[in-house]
Length: 75
Image (cartoon, rainbow, N blue to C red; front, side):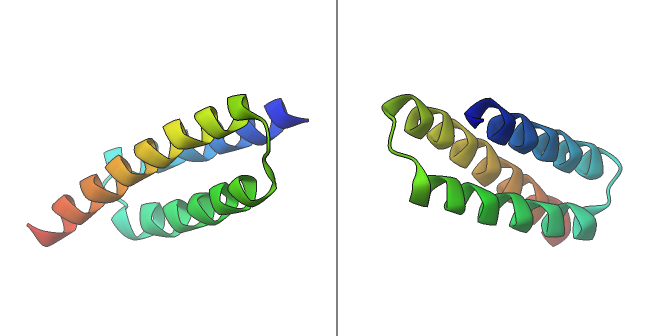
């Protein structure tokens, strides 16, 4: 079950990357927000250390993608 959650998150992250690559920043922002909310839910219900480690990796990645969108839209 946990693998399905992370595979869904991985798919969302790839979609965000593709949207950024296509310069569809507004759609990327919406998708990033959805992925962040999903990640927050995972944090709330996760107890295993392995899950928390995986979640923290996605937190860093989503933060980097947010910065990338922010840089691209403020230029």
